[in-house]
Amino acid sequence: MRFDLAPSTIITTVVIIAGLWALIRLMPVILVLVAALIIVGTLSPAVSWLEARRVGRGWSIAIVFTALLVVTVLGVALTVPEFLAQVSSLIEQEPALRAGFVARLAGSRLTAPLAEALRTMQYGAVLQSFGATAFTFSTRVLELFAYSLGAVFLALYMMIDRDRLRGGLYSIVPRTHHIRLSRVMMNLETIVGGYIRGQAVTSALMAVFMFILLLACRVPNALAIAVFGGVADVLPYIGIFLTMGPAVVAALARGPVVTVIVLVLMLAYEEFESRMIVPVVYGRAMRLPSSVVLFSLITGATLLGIVGALLALPVAAAILMLIDELRVELPGETEGIANAALRKRDDRGEQEYERRTEGMHAEQAAAIAVEMSGERKKEEKAGPHAPPEALPDDKKKE
Figure 1 (cartoon, rainbow, N blue to C red):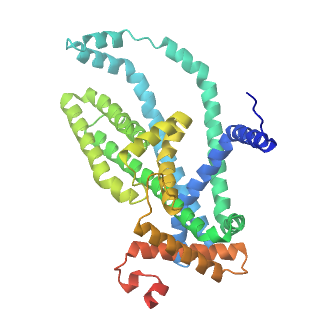
Figure 2: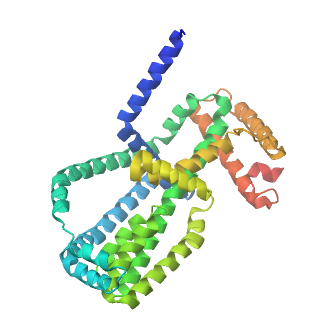
Figure 3: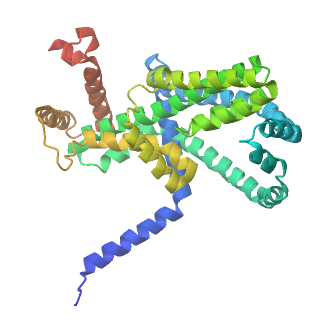
């Protein structure tokens, strides 16, 4: 058998391999860019809100980033020193806490072997391993801080230079696809911004609830456990165990009654959060089936670890949104009457956009595309039977 490869096939294969190699090598840079885009999507609604109240865009960006800096500094100043002190206290109290836990486990035949294993556990190997990796860990922390700072400044520059960057993006995309591109960018901003803001709100509420609960039950080191629980709450499915575990274990020192109270109230809050808080906070930004959520988390964690798990849900929601916005016909699915009507409506919108932007520069055309997509989004939110005041101006005239 003889295989003849065309030169174009060889060149394409080499380019793909080189692209994958460059993608792997530049993964930190790509993650910084993704983080900057996430920051932009998260803060853009606040900037737009200030602009709608006649505050200049430059002042709006300055106010939002200054507020973010002040909140971050205050949060670190109020929590980190106390958090480190309580973690140090937990380490010092570890022998006494372990002895009490072992005594409770030894009281039952079922848990007696576990008590013996816990009593004879040695930390020498763990401490040696920690000492060997402490320098590497501190280096990684410095790298993470530098990348995070770079992402913040990149996001700041992207927001300041929004019109020019948007014009550059629209200039390389055919004008017939500008309306669709603007809708995709708008929906991506909604998905990413809604996800990050939702995560921040739910994590903060979890930390506050845990701190109040543990403080009311007089559980020691309540702040450290609450901060850890708030951070762990960002992980779906796994977060419930990481938040409840330390709280319940710390409550054992206060007796079985307090432990049961903490466990029951934590379970009740987890149910309240999933049923009431999450739908209100996230809205329609993250309406994903449970199977898609689980598969996305497994895939993201396998590829990029914790970072991949955190980015898995917005990426999955963005992919589903792209399939819907680009009117991708999936195998085995036929185009219905509603999809055909939407496709015709998209064609009319693109023709109207081309007529209005004929001869315009890319930056001006991009602004009109965003305006038309915003009007279309308001109309879709209002619904077909909305009152005139809920519709855009051109629809009111109709």
